[in-house]
Image (cartoon, rainbow, N blue to C red; front, top):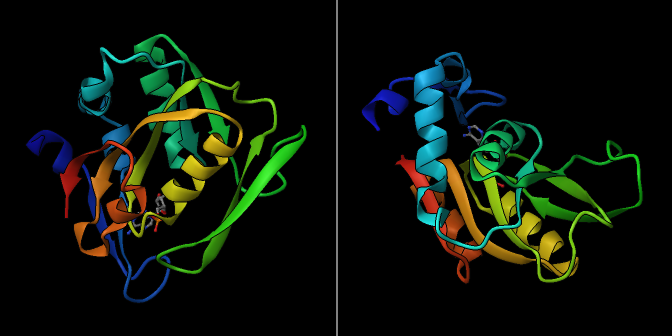
Length: 171
Ligand code: AMP
């Protein structure tokens, strides 16, 4: 895990004063450490019945797609408003900085699909909670939520209290 932690760069005051932004681009440049991060992300779920991985725009796409390929399942994107071309369901939520909305295609999830949700980082948990809600509203079941980074002091996992939450690195 030290190898992965060493490749996460802290950028103070980005995108606004007071935010310590955790930059995962150095990790993305190192194929061995990146692969290790993906294997560690899916480890608790490897023997579970997972139909899809879902990931949030934009950095959830990177880890989510790699995790889906490792698990041999498909990937479902949760996107910012106005990006998905077909019929969508939307949900608004609060962020550590500001507020946001996410959308999912109405036909992305079939009822009884079991979905592993993946993002680079959980902060307040608003993004992940909204994603779980969108998937559950579509009839899917959340098999678990996995993050490379968790900002423990923001207690984001409390918003995901009824789901299994797995994070690799804690700040
Ligand atoms: P939240 O909804 O507060 O849990 O925020 C999580 C989402 O915002 C994730 O998609 C992260 O990529 C992004 N995010 C929030 N805070 C940070 C941070 N300090 N560093 C990097 N990304 C962050």
